[in-house]
Length: 337
Image (cartoon, rainbow, N blue to C red):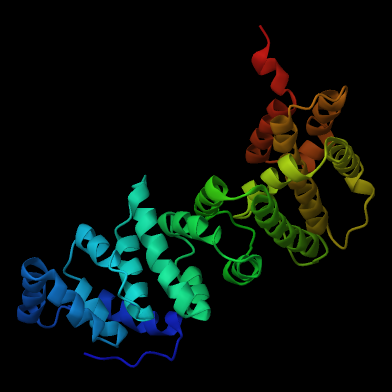
């Protein structure tokens, strides 16, 4: 079965492939040949690799790989001679499909990193599509983070700008954290600053835009997938005085939120939570920097215990976030005897 691939469009091609996989027998249409392939893999791996190198259509790779175990996929992935972009994409897909939802082995990230590097060297546009396709996978993000260190600044900027969409949800926060952590392990200081500045600017643009959007509604703190990038940006790249000044400014805005012009009650609620979201990030940076500004804790206590604002804007979940923010500002008490 050979389906036409949609040019270089991974999303369209795999929409068809995954539709077939979900229905009926999927690609298990020739069990004899499928078992022969497994047999060939076992008795003559070199010949199996040669057979793979002659395939062209994505569906052929799906058929060849579907009956193999993850360990066997990893062995194939370690073959540097396999340069076909669709083959390399499919081998990543097979490994990612079997990733643990709890934890994964460091060796798996190394394997996917190598395969992804082969894709990037041959076709950077296809490389970016691959990132978009697997952007929810923690294993893939960890591998990508390790690989991005070896990319140029312009390539890193393309990846952050084009391959990750910011929205109000933080469902992929853990995956982005894996990307960040793996990047930081091998990056130089300049690379660290560059990546975190890119991510922060992306987040800041999104944040400022929705702050001015009349029909956007937010009734809880806003984190997005890049929340921890924002925290680490302020921890490492915002100086102490500026950080404290920003916190005080946000507290003042929140205190006088009822005096700020808004087009509707919904927009006022949204602004309240957006200001608190930014302040919440800053409390983590304040804690990380081990700052100790007199009266800041008292001001924050007064802010989060405002009875009028509680009745108008605050949910139980938000109250719990306020408690965490307070603990961050009062970090010194953790070390008190």
